[in-house]
Image (tube, rainbow, N blue to C red; front, side, top):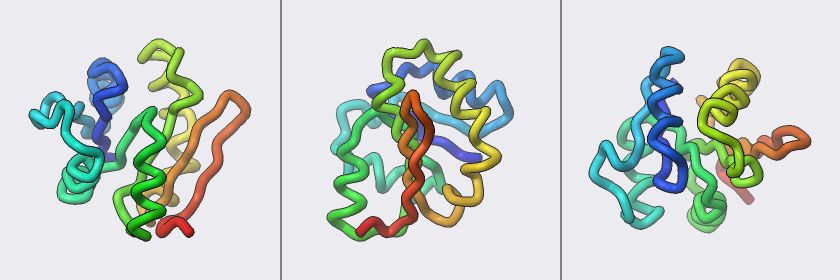
Length: 122
């Protein structure tokens, strides 16, 4: 799976996802640090990437625009975890989430589970 890691997460998240066999880049690698969320979304769509972020604004932008892409993984409630712990949680759930993310969805992770909503959001 292809991932775009938002600037509110460590570049180490992209590194660890890449080591696990995924194509993952951090916004820093695309020279998009401090870029508006809409630009990050465009980069994700253009690159066929799932955004991994702790920023709930992506969900709001997707809802407002009624866009069917890009998919996203929101980890706001897990932001206190170290990158290896966060990546392990993502990887442990990726098999179940992959079909949803490929067809367009937002998966919000919390300490109690994952909520998945299909795109476009209503």
